[in-house]
Image (cartoon, helix red, strand yellow):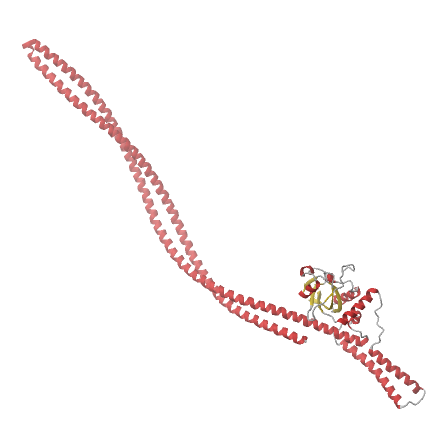
Length: 519
């Protein structure tokens, strides 16, 4: 902290029962700080974590104090002192700090500082002393220690009374008493100093830094060391109790949270058990459904096989029908050809009949002429007239027959033409029927192929459903095992909840014990 940093001169204080706690790594980088430290420093927790601890250093603190601190804690020993710290806004606050090294596997890995509110007289001594150090003035105290004062006075008195004795002079009784008192006082002073030194050595956590001793006590010598040892030992004990108190609070909080989590876990296991039972029931029902579906699939496969056979038979029948229709088409075609030939022959007959009719007409004319000529011949032509008449009658009958034949031929031609038209229509219908039957055969063939594929898929589906039924039985068994495990976990969760509750009670007892020893 630079000396030119903004300072307000305003002092902040905190309650007697509050402790400012922080921990750093070996380089002094802050890794933890409690809420009390955050509050009085004026920084946020985020601003403190990861920063050097000297972020709160005040320029009124002499370098000698920090040099002493680093010397102690880097060598693995605790350090204590009255420290003036700077707030973020330039205010300041005083703390009675006790810093201890943090060990892991015998190595120093960081430092922890527990700071409490200092006594006012200690703050005043520290303020005066630090001002002298910063000003370069001497801080030596010329006051003689109490033990040295008493032992020196006693020995001086004994030496003064010993001079008359060395000259052979007699001393009155009261001088003898005074001589004894002086010797006793000197011996008592020496004994006092020895006992104080011995008592100080019996305190393993005694802190004997010269600068700190001048801050915490006005005494010097053995009595001052003894007083400093008691103060440092009390500070050490206070730090231990404080950390135990915080540990007890943390244990209580963790135990309470563990108890809540155990209760929630137990409830979750109960819910899981209910859900597992429902899943088991659903799995059992699903297994029954799968078995039923498997039976239906097998029946479907059987029926699909029958339908496949029927489709193949239908395809064969369609094929045979197509062949029959094609034969019918050929025969109708042959009939059409025959009818066409008959029609053509009828035309030929009609032509011949017309020729005969013409001949009959001419014969009739000739017979008529012959009859006329016979009539002219008279008696001689009578026989010829009879023949001519017969010929004429024959010609007339021939004409009538040819007319009938002509009528029959016309009717035959008309019917032949109608038969030809019907045969043509029949041929077209047969061709369409053959085409439709061919398409029907193709569709039946495709249906048969599809049914064959469906039958194959049905067989595969049946096998898959059987496998799924087996897996479902396995899952049902596993769900049953999970249900049993859930019951066991529920029992263990309830036991864990009970132990968490007991741990919470133990933490409360530990906290009460710490409070009892703190008083």
